[in-house]
Each structure stands twice: as structure tokens, then as C-alpha cells.
Length: 98
Image (cartoon, rainbow, N blue to C red; front, side, top):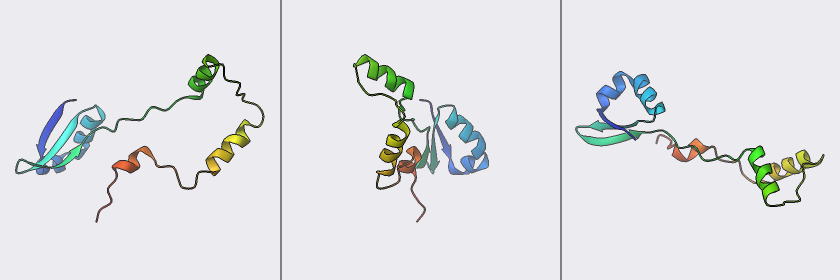
């Protein structure tokens, strides 16, 4: 991953361009007097298994699970049984201002 070191003043001058570089995969280290104060970098998305992949794996392992008429109800029950909201991938990176 390419790394760009930039002053806070330069970062503030054209933040939109910095975000474009981050989206392209670059890591940006924002510095104040050569001391790092912030890092902008792409979030690595976690692997999400598609239903088609799950079905392929079920068949490969000779699973007897079926997607019958009760599947939707069963899936809804699983989701509703989760006691707290599921975290979004970006939640673990968010630090609220104090």
C-alpha cells in the first residue's frame, strides 16, 4: 500500500483529493511538524458469504438443510433473537469526538 505523508495544512486544503487517493488504496499520514496526528486508509471489507456460496458448500458437505417455505420465518427468528443491534463494519473505526 502506498503511503503519503502530508501536513495538516495541506490536508485541509484539498481533503476531497485525499479521499480520492484513499479510495484508490493509498494510506495518508497527516502530520503536524513531522509528528503523525492522523491516518486515513481504506477499510478492508470483511468477507461476506453469498447465499449461492453457502448453498454450494452445503451441497459439497452433503448437508440435509433445505430452503423450504419456512426458511424466511426461521431466518427472521434468528435475526430477531439477536439481543443487540449488529455492528456495522465501520462502527469499530469510529471514535466519537470528546
